Length: 79
Image 1: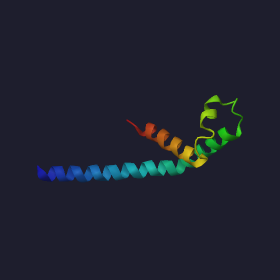
Image 2 (image 1 turned 90 degrees about the vertical axis):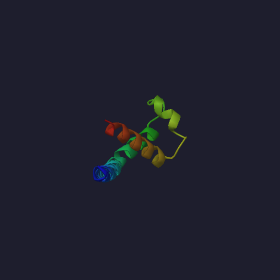
Image 3 (image 1 turned 120 degrees about the horizontal axis):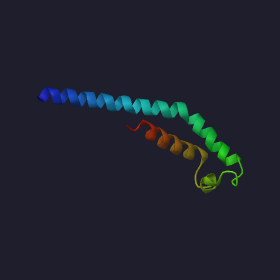
Image 4 (image 1 turned 30 degrees about the horizontal axis):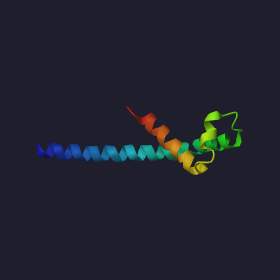
């Protein structure tokens, strides 16, 4: 029985590493899209996008794109 627990632990660790790798790969591949969206919300007048007016001066473009990418992909990967 102890051997089964060790194998389960190893498989959990490998699954976790695989999931982390997939998450990072998805962030890497989708970040340019999120960056383009954030930049476009900064360029377009605030009256056209009311939701964008709140975040225009609160953080940097890179920080906002990273935050949006991480939260969107995390939600997409939930079961």
